[in-house]
Amino acid sequence: MITTESAARVNNTPTDAEQNISSDHTARRRLISKSVLGLISLFMLVPILIVLLSWTQPVADIWTHMADFVLPEVLKNTIILLAMVVLISGSVGTVLAWVTSMYRFPGQRFFTWALMLPLAIPAYVLAFVTVGIVDFSGPLQTALRDLGVSAAIPSVRNVWGAGFILSLAFYPYVYLLARQAFLSQGRRAIEAGQMLGLSRSRVFFRLALPQALPWIIGGLLLACMETLADFGAVSVFNVDTFTTAIYKAWFGFFSLTTAAQLAALLIGVVFIVVLFEQYWQAKRGNGVTQGSTQRFEAGALATISMTLLCTSIFLMAFLIPFLQLIYWTALNFRQDFDARYIDFVTNSLLVASMTTVFIAFLAVIVAWIKRQYSDRSTKLMTSLANLGYVVPGTVLAVGVFIPIAWVDNQLIALGISSEQVLSGSVIVMLLALSTRFMTVSFQPIDRQLQRLTVNQEAAAKLLSDSAYQRWRQVMLPVLSPGVLTALLIGFVEVMKEMPITLMTRRQGWDTLAVRVFEMTSEGMWGRAALPSLLIVLVGLLPVWILLRQSDKTG
Image (cartoon, one colour):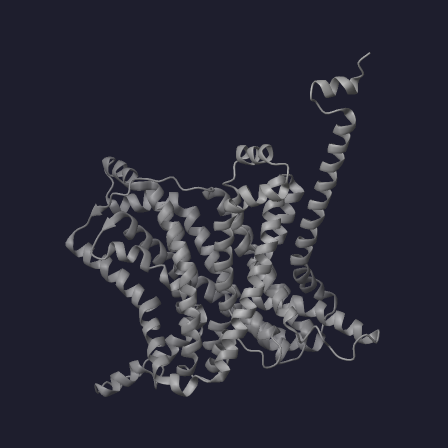
């Protein structure tokens, strides 16, 4: 008599026992994966929760002072900065995207990619170079006096100057997304509008602009988040915002609790922006459909105007600041360059390397788990793991330092340590940087992993029973480009980050970004040029990657 088990062997089908074992193995693997993802999400979420919980410990006397003298100015400046960035970045980015994607004019091919180069210059570098150029002792006013022109240029060290520079620094976010939107519409949509009797200007306002609006607003919200997170540029212009107020509360009032409570307010503002960004991202969809790439010919006056506009923005936002950095570096190199720069560069490279390798490792794990399980809990935990990028560096610095300091105090209370060991180490900086830039590594790795089809994964399982062999032969070749991109972009972002390294570094452990802050705080623009130039040169790398990606889609 043939048993069920024997029949199963004859038919080469799994028995009930084997099915139960397989089911138990799948459930156990799912539990482990979800637990790992939950731990990573919690790790990324703790700094934000710590900041929000700071409101349970009000500091009445300091808050009275803050409410009377600090918050009104902070709120006013923040509103002005956001309004200027929305108005100027939105207008400049949209117009530049329109003319470079739809018209043919002298320099059009060059400006198509060159107008993205300002992304390589951190806002705080653009800020101090601008102030150094237009100051009384700067090259602009000096040249005017040499020509016999004595009229003084109004001071730019105010909220209006800061708003203008931040707009120049962040308009590429609008430009990049708006250009993709206009390219997706193509020339045919414009010609269809003209066939209905509309002029090209009316086609722009009535057809092209409404369709591109979700993309433009998406770019504007990114610019707004960068504005809220900015610390270096507003410090150069002596403008108080939430980020500078957090820094002063910590290092001026020596009140970490007050700094955390200010950070909690800033989180509330940022999350409102994030909600808007998510809404408009859903409206604009995930992809860009390629339209016609043929461009219109314009009249002589319009052609000259387009060339002048692109040239002016390119000069102000990139070329003049870049050349000024080179000039100041050459002028001050012998005086400024010494053995300390070896430490600045070494510290910057060390922190950037350690952080990017760590977050790339975590990003691979999160992206893989997300691919395996598509339920709501996995999506939620994945979103939480990537939440840190929308939180300003000053907030994360406070949120990470508080629990680390608490652990240090517990170690001292238990007699394990006689002094604070963790608070003065690089660990605080690495944790804050990892939380801030996790999503920078996750996005390219996740996009690359999505290229692996279900059929490819199934074929890999048929070819080998070894998980190691499948990873080595199938997964790694697919993931490698995404991991490389994640490492490069993450490395550069960490190199440029100022507030986290400034607020969490141990005494004497300076980086290039910290050196820039110290020199600009004392008005030594020339001596801040060398570290800034090094940061800008490294920053050209992710811009090149973005340009390649833009060429593929546009």
